[in-house]
Image 1 (cartoon, each protein chain N blue to C red):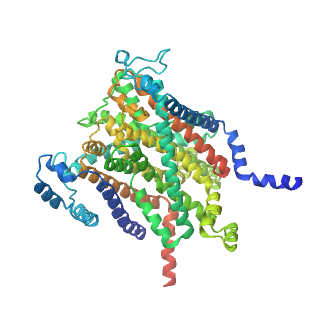
Image 2 (tube, rainbow over the protein chains, first blue to last red):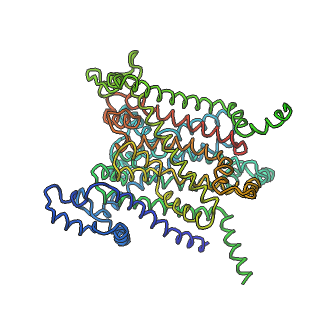
Length: 323
Length: 299
């Protein structure tokens, strides 16, 4: 098992280097002279040249990337053009808000998606199943920024029940301000989870061991929980994990709609003000988080699925025999 | 001769005719398909109208402002109502169709050709070629597609071409993976070996024998991909990074509506409904195609 984790960790390194390089390369295509952006219009030619040297812009791309990577490892992502504050602390400041939102979104998705999927599978081809599958198809197809607008139109403007802008301070205000963004972010994922849960439940529902359990007289609820759901969980865990990564990166739209002070909104603002170091830093950071979340999902996957675990055990056992 | 035709016919029409026969039974998928065809007709007609009238219709009705009538709700004259500048939302919806539809389709077409070729080459040659191509794809896949598209547009600037490039690039790895997987299942089959034994070149084997036999998953992936790409176009425009006003586009219409959400519900509801129905149609069409192409996957 540890061997598997170690192997996956080592495989992460080239991926992360590749990701940072691609993002760095894309950002280096930005037209315009960063030195001019920083110093403004009145700068003299000498000052511009000095600034370019200071920023390392006179060096080739690969060297600049090397410097960027070196600084990145030391937690230095440069200085934002917009407010002259280092990029790294700004990211660290906003990231927890994005994580809170993503977790809330996932919780909404699980709370809706898994029960709907289970009921649909157990009542396959009934009206209930048809209705929930049509609803989940609609949920998958609904652009979440539209859903966000509709929710704030209804619950914030018409009914006045919940706030639609910003993040509340204190526990209860925070929860209240989380409801609409979390629903916005979670609905699409809930629909995906419901569809996945249904299809993976259907795969196990007619297995022989289920009949055996029934024949033994195990209660139906226990069969669903222990025999069906546990086996059906594996693809669901993967899907949810992948979606979590997508939520981290894709919170831009939701955060913009609800003025949520997260990394996504910071990124959109930075793009609009052409703050390249900030955009570069935030993109690299989010892409790295996405890769790390995927890695964690893969490791959880190995723990949930005894077949992967035993594969590694067997591999070890056979090696021992050979020696 | 006639008997020969009769016996060879069922074999000739095997996959595609069979697929169509099964697809016809899936009423939902057909409804989706008709809706998409309708959208294509609308998009093409509006382009034709622009060409014939030299945009005078567009100038006089689609982007014409009428500030006295702003935020007016749906009525007999304007079935979807009027927007913040008193422009007819119904006409703007029709004129916006082309951007979502053609940009989504075109981006996926580019991604399919580039990703598909890379995947086919990787799967067919294997070894180092496979490793180099697929590791590169892994890296691209490690960046969430919306993030990648945003970064590209942020760097290159907002223009139709840049949005198209951004979305196409973010979809390349998905297609490379799909095609590679199906090439791997096809490449060791006997008809490929036979072609090789007859002295066919690698190029011929890939394009004549392997790709046609791995088309099924690619078509399904492309249909679903267009849905995703349309969402990306709308999302980027919503963030102000896609199609710029006053050009009507569903995402940017929604983005404008956000500032006037108090003034009229129809400003928000209608463009989103347009996006959702399009995505929904593509999704049920994709699901239907998948079931029709490979009935074993259906449950």
